Length: 449
Picture (tube, one colour):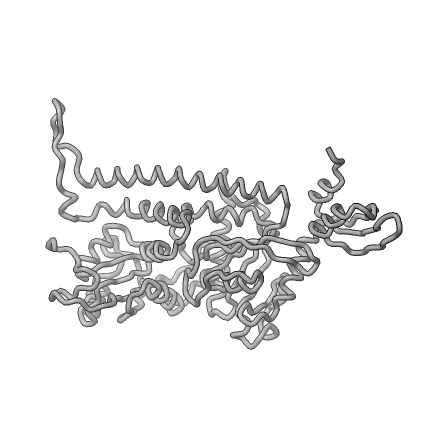
């Protein structure tokens, strides 16, 4: 092994292997307001809650957490982020617990990451690197793999300043130019850039394909309901409960990454498409926000944005603010996928009511139209479906038609695309009063070619 490099993750330094990687989670904690905009400001998240989330993230990649600590910060140190005494105290705990990997729940610069590895003599990753590692393990579809690889390369490109000895070599020039040639670090950076260009082209094709799918759905226009929410809020469990699908759902952070779509039938008989999307998290790495833009565009095209919250979580208010902050970022800029009026399409679902004693025990369950449910037990789901029906019916028009008795196809079309309120059958025709969206009404009344 090169001198000065951290030992492999499962190596104690004496040539023996210890099995699962022994890891430490360190939270540098700053007491300062969260910058989430004037209408979403909230108190700083409790240090214990932030540490618990970081431990959950680290545990989800299969390491064994043997040490965790909170280090209050007065100011960030440019060289190591933490203060000198905090670095020394952490090193003592790392040595005592034979830690091979340290997760620092903060955004470290490449220099800070390198210096901490030298001080602690083990592998160090920051919050961004940890989330990228989780995403890399969980992505299953080609699209998800492309998005994760692009985000990882964008992150890794800034880490090539590390002092590995093989990056200090240079290749000699050729021909009459001579010169020292191109250093290995420059070659690596150029290869990464070339790969990123290729990945962006492939993801652009994904966006075009998704756009084609959306246009196909518009031809047979079923409303789209997109699930969004903080990771582990129960989106996939709710998705399975409403659709009967078998989407992977576990009590862990980022259990699923790849978007899934299924059809559901609402109480009025109207059909809709339910879309499960990737979970959000506080301080989501900017690389991932950009890389998962194609996935998040499904949210932008939705008729209803169903914001699923873990109402039993002690930090549910802060998690709500984090999700709204990411959505706000999607509405900023010339090419922003979200329109300015996206807030009007949001319906909050207060999930995991069973942990509080049931729907009736959820505080503010009916505030601002929010619906309290338990996706696990099914309590509150009928009320949620009715609320979705009411939202979709808000812009619908009530029309009365006389359909010839022999024209069963047009009558069936009205049942599929609208809400039949009243029906009266006569010998000559069928008198129906139906609620339709403006688009469906125009399609139905359009004269045949």
